[in-house]
Image (cartoon, rainbow, N blue to C red; front, side):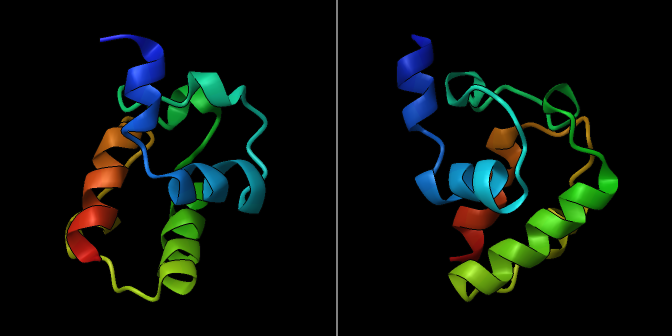
Length: 86
């Protein structure tokens, strides 16, 4: 699978939250499902900010699994948690 194909698997709204709301400075082409939060400079606090922002932005309540996201979790893990809550 190519990086471009993997990239399209991430919800655009998740990418927007990471790059705009949380202002993570990263090339959007690097944001693939297998990228860890730690590798793009996100720590536990920024993950909690992401969860709160996602709940507000999407009008959802994320499951407890979303609260278990860690810097070692991948963007794909977050995408699944967000999708399951929608």
